[in-house]
Amino acid sequence: MSGHLDARGCLTEGGLTAIAASPPGQGPPDAAAHLASCARCQRRFLALAGEKVGGIRAVPGTATPPPLWRTALIAVAVLIMLMIAVVAMRSLLG
Picture 1 (cartoon, rainbow, N blue to C red):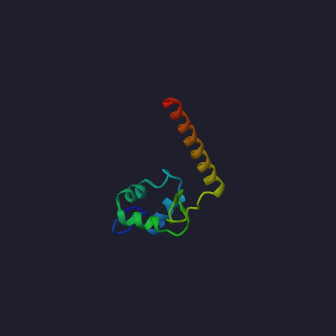
Picture 2: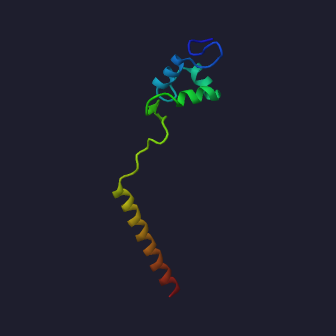
């Protein structure tokens, strides 16, 4: 049993913290291998406090919507493409 696993074989708080503090792919190998196969520890890892854990957004629903100007720009671009398609279809059929 390593320092990252408890007597039950699940990750300790220290193990979860070690994975969260490590860059993606660089965590302790024994803790990462266990986390990959244990649904209980995965739920515990994702439930850790904070907006981001190890580069992964852990709190669902915290994404910010895109700015309104970007949405309007996409809408205008779609309308222009639609107008181009209509003109092209009229020239092919007419």
